[in-house]
Image (cartoon, rainbow, N blue to C red; front, side, top):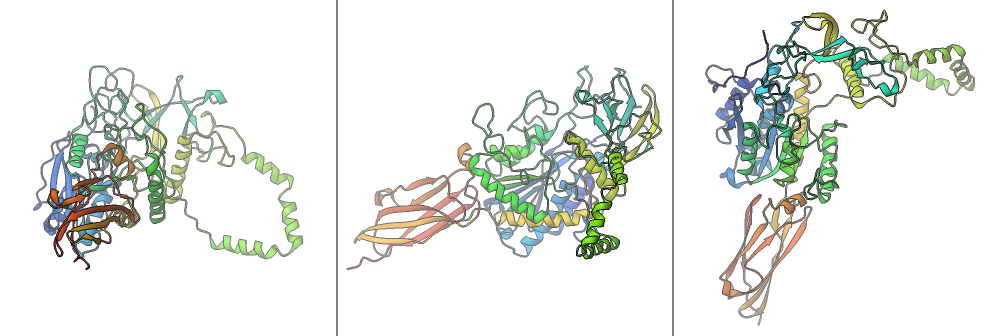
Length: 619
């Protein structure tokens, strides 16, 4: 019987029957129903600043929730911050962090903390809820794609050959089988891992690798047509690549991606966007010198925006202590569209990456270090150490550790149950190790040393109905992208620190000093400045180029026949950040003591107004 999980239409959760999570409770992972109850609970507790709406429904019928938080009288008139998470079906951590940040934003608004008290914040915490339910299901299966039925193997049937938990351990992992068409061999540094064979350097493959499951459609292939078929982060317009796996039949083909684009375009006040998911443009600043085939749209950033992104990335690294994030193609990703086509600063980050190894020096090591330090003052001791380190026995041991011999699977050290460290023992530096294997090694080391081995299932024999004798094992689903729940609190605090710094850098346009000069008893010259007190420019260069960030509109509210110099209405495309200025000047007709009103309309920042009194003429 074919196994999997269904995505039925999700009914609205009744608050009387579902326990609401308290803001005082530790951060945790919540399935769709619990998430819905949590969001509804926030609104019920704080209806003065919170509003919950559904911006659409997923293909599986689940509501796509948008939480609005604002303490201003007219939320739609305030500058807005957008936080989006859960576009990728495996982004359980980002979704959890987004909800926790909602609690902190709400508290900051209630306390009148600036700039939160003057902003509107939109949080869309789970934009791809259907596949994410597999994290909470059994068996647990890491599925990133939205659930559009898709004929992956082009046999006329859709989703007919998905994975199964054959050994009943509650996880969909991997299978390896000895096969004449083998593609992989055990890693010499740790035989639990598999390396893709490179025959050019003499690799002899041993295993063929499959995801855990059966040949459901009897086509001699296994799991080649699993459930779902669209990666939402390949489905948006910018950098969309037709006919690539996961891209979907056309741009924003999915109800989830279309709902997100519709939401953004219907909220022009959005001035900055934060996206939690698998992509990153903070630690790895995108290039500013690459364009698409039209030579018009940037593949990364426009060159004039690179310096800003580097500075924000530097701050992010300092506040979160994240040092490295794997690079990932951004073609068709939401954050790339939001920057390149919506035109606002948009930052993407996976809220969690593999922690650095813990550096703990034992008491014994400290004593040894102290002893070694003391001995450095004794030349004879140092000489003895030097002599001892070059003995033949020592050289022999080094040569043994650096052996290149690779397990062939037929030795007494079975890859399934034998030597975990392999014969290479990790001593020799292999410059030709492919990046994916380096990552596997690092994650396995993290699992062994910091997670008690919980991240990897040791290979165990299993009799497969069509493949015969196989071994089932590999990394546990979600292990490499989802931190332990007890780590969420620290992650949230660091992301909160960065988010606060980020919104504090939004552009702030103000009027500068006003000068009024009488040119005659009835003619006056008015000069003033528009000053940007924020860090960000009013518009990034990309926003100027694509014209999606509309210019500031300056209007002198005076009858046209009284304006002798300067435009009654003028457009200001941009004002640089960090105290950047734009000069304004008019010559007007009037009487001493009359007031002239100047207004500035801004799609992103709201309206400004300045009343200028015409000074009396000096006799």
